Length: 315
Image 1 (tube, helix red, strand yellow):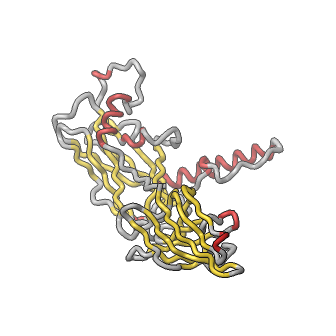
Image 2: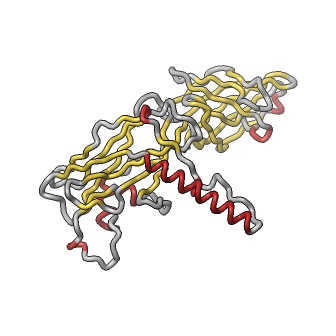
Image 3: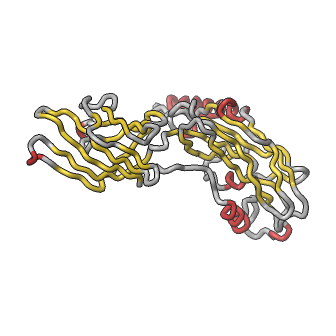
């Protein structure tokens, strides 16, 4: 899984608005008479999973990092042509939305569960997204340089930036950051006025990789290789991912790969792995330019060490 950041091209956004019309109007609408309005085009791209109160959810994945990561939201003048005067748009983060949505989702789950019991059916799966419970992104974990966005005369877009720090966020928690237009300096505010960012965190080394490697046994007749083997690296913490050891995932051989500050890699057995002797056995490094692990490691078997040489490259 490569980095899935919310940075849509401004040009694509503008083109989409002009061709598809983010404003909710009929196909035969006379666009030359379209009233000017202000909107968040990313809300129009958030997919069919809209919430009941005019906001749209957008899932993003941020890397675990103590360095602030910019989350840029494009603010758009939806108009036939650029305006001749600047527009100042006021934005806001309103966490009361999270409370409202959580209450709605709890009520929905209760209603669906009651109906299931009444009809002698199975209880609904609480993990379904329509029942999701969100945690407001803590105020200590984001900063906003300015709550106003200035769209200069003759331009259609400008960016509203929130800097998110993810080092203290908890894996598996669904954080929500609701962003909405609150004032458009007298201009109409479009239907696409709010977007609810659902933020999850992961190690930047998490993702889908391809592995090529070999394993050497005390008896060379048992040596084997593998190529183009799919491996999924999953987050343990910001610098550590869990990975199949050699080609032995089916035997529950898993290892942790910790990338150190100098890009050397420490290899250890993963918690719960069938073999707890997996360890470094030579050069183990991560190349950030190619996003490739080059590893030499081993584990102890019944007749001695099994030595593995392997490269694991991000797809």
